Length: 524
Image 1 (spheres, one colour):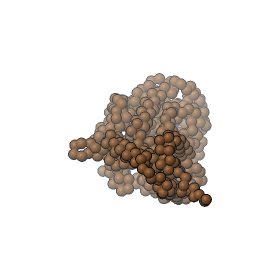
Image 2 (cartoon, helix red, strand yellow; image 1 turned 90 degrees about the vertical axis):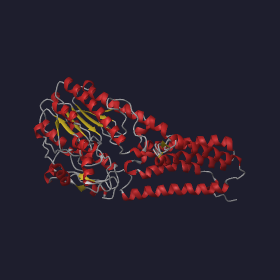
Image 3 (cartoon, one colour; image 1 turned 180 degrees about the vertical axis):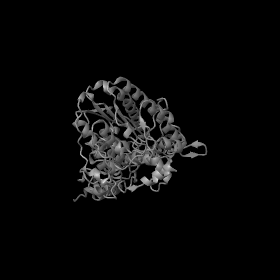
Image 4 (cartoon, helix red, strand yellow; image 1 turned 45 degrees about the vertical axis):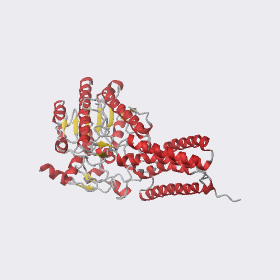
C-alpha cells in the first residue's frame, strides 16, 4: 500500500513550533542575521519534542498527541499578539487589559480542548492531514517572504555590498581625506579619550519645548567643568543605526542609497560599518588600548569588552523579540529587564574605573541605552517599574519615566566626570553625545516640522585639552572626531558641511535634506 507521508505522519506540531521563529525573523530581517535563527529554533524544537513525548504518555494515539501539542504551541505564541491588543484596556475605571484576565480564558481553552481530545472517539486522521497542510503553507509563506526580501535587499546581511569610499555627500574636498595623523612627540602624554553616546537624550531646547523639562542645571554643570556644549546641535540622522556609524566613520552614509537602493530596509550593512570604523582604526594605529561596552546592535572590534551580559536575550535579538510574544512573556520580560538594569548600572560603575585598570592611553566607546526606554530608574537611581502597557506610549506617565531616567543619567555622568577629571594625570578628552533626540508623538510617515525638530535635537558636549575654540554651536556629530583629531593629534581632516537628513524606518536610505528647515526653525 502506498503511503502519503505528507498526510499521514504527524509533523504539524514541529512546523507550528518553528513558524513563530521563522515568521518573526522574516518580519525583522532588516536587523537580524540568519545565524540568529539557530538558537531559538533549537530551543523550540527541543521544547516541542519534550512536550510531544510527555503528551504521548497520556493520549496514546499519535494523531491525538499531535493535535494537543499543536494546541499548546498555538496558545503559547498567540498570547503575546492578543495581549498587545488588549494591554492597558479599561472598562470604565476598571483595568481589564491585564495578564491575569487573559491567562484565565487561555487555561480554560487548554483544559477543555485537551479533555475533548482525550474523550472523543475521533481518530483525528483527517484533521492531522489538514493541520499538516496548514503548517506547510505557513512555513512556505515565511520562506517566500524571506526570499523576496533577499532579492529586493541584496541578500540577507551575509555580505556587505562594495561601497566606493570616495562617494560623499558633503564638500568635494573631503574626497581626498586620509586616515593619517602626524605623529605626536610622546606616546605617554596621549590623553585618554572617552566617547559616550547617551541613546535618545534630547537636546536642551527640545526637552523644554516638547517635555516641559528644564535641563539647564546639567548644562551649567558641564560648562563649569570646562565642557563646550553646542547649544544648537542636531544629529545627522534620526536612527541610531545610521547616526552612530556616521559619527564613528566621520562621514555621511548617503552613499548607502546607491549601494543598497532607495527601497532597501537593510539596517545590517550600516551597523557593520562600526566593526572597523575609521575612528577605531586611527586610535589603534596610534597604540591606544580600545574598550567597548556591550551593545547588541553595534558590535565594535576592541581590545576589551566590558559589562558583557550572560542573558540569551541580550545576545540574540530574535530571542528577545520572541520572548515578548509568547505566553511566558511576563516572567521572561522581567528577567530580561533585570539583566538590562544590571548592565546599565555596570556601565556607570565601570566607566570611572577604566583609567585605573589600563596603563596605556585608552579610547573608550560607550553606547549607553539611557535615557532610552525601558526606563528602569527613578531620578536618584531607584529601581522602578518600566512601561508595561503598549497604550502607554507617549502618555504623560511615559514622558515622566523618561525624564526620571534622564535625571538619573545626569547624576551618573556628573559622578564620572568628577572622578575622571580629578584622578587622571593628563587631561582626558570626553565627548558626550546623543545619537538622536526623543520621538514622543512623532509620526514617522508624515512628520511635522515640530516633530522633526524634536527628533533631531540632541546633546553634544566636548571636553578637550586643545581645540575647544574650534567648536561651534551648530556642530553635528559627523564633525566631532574631525575636530578632535585635528586639534589634539595634529590631524588633517577638513570639516564637512553640517547636514541633517531625514528618513524613516521603512525606507531608511531615502534621504531628505532638512538642514535648511531645521535651521530656519532655530532662527524663529
